Length: 345
Image 1 (cartoon, rainbow, N blue to C red):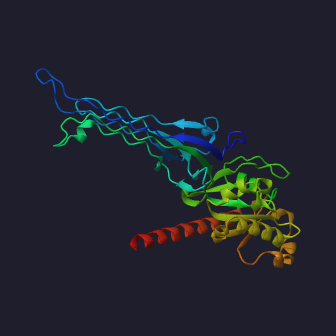
Image 2 (image 1 turned 180 degrees about the vertical axis):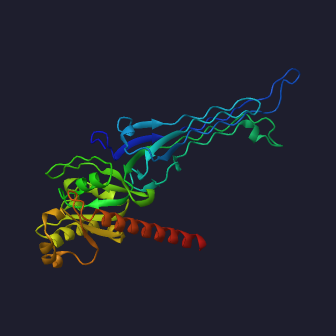
Image 3 (image 1 turned 135 degrees about the horizontal axis):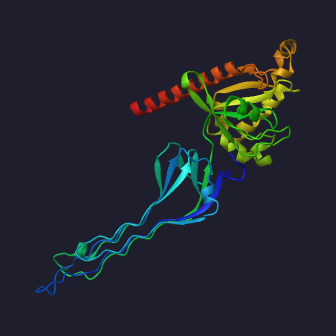
């Protein structure tokens, strides 16, 4: 993803269309100078609709277009003809996009599937024509309804990258290098902190034509849950990853300490993140020999599985893919099982 083109947060003003007014008309024809009411209804105002699109990966299209308005419905006409509805405005958004009310911060919708649509703002209803108001006591109603006004407000669109696996780690621990080795993604790689400023997404090819998506999330620093180092921008992308792969260098001075920092930042940002399956990848395994691995066995957190990997030598890469794929499948099966149980209830 090009840094200049990746936009994951926008605030936009949306206005749905007004409903068209009903018609106040009476039938007139040769020999019928005073026919009954035949005013048609006004058309519905245009909706503002969000639609998921798997081919999009950024909210860039909204960065320079802050005000979006749908068309108004047309006025009703004679012979009980209804006015045309205003054209809807469909906002194509990447999967993983959420919409919030900018004033209340209320979560309104969450787009996760390709092609699914949500009506974010409904257009105003068209007014009824005077033909609706004819009665035994009022044969010639000389009035019709105005159309209902549309809805206007400021809304926040926020993208949370969807991936099967999210890479979690402090800056400069080898996450981008790992992604570049196991997928076709080409993230920027350098030996300094915060090389990765936006999430990078890659497809990891597995056995028998299977694949899964892996996201390189910008490095977390201590205090990220408070917004330090653009922490909230980084952490929100982790929320949408099904499985978390913690990356800590095998030659780190304090492996448990780094893991505690990462775990603490995730928990304080959103405790539900700790419910996701976790795996520890000890990167740069080529920097430590087998004897040192045995000596440091007690320094590795024992509450999650761990694998030594090296993007240089390829050590552990096959085992890493196998373990991740099994975690992903188990997670999917658990989710589908819960959904089925809810439907049966």
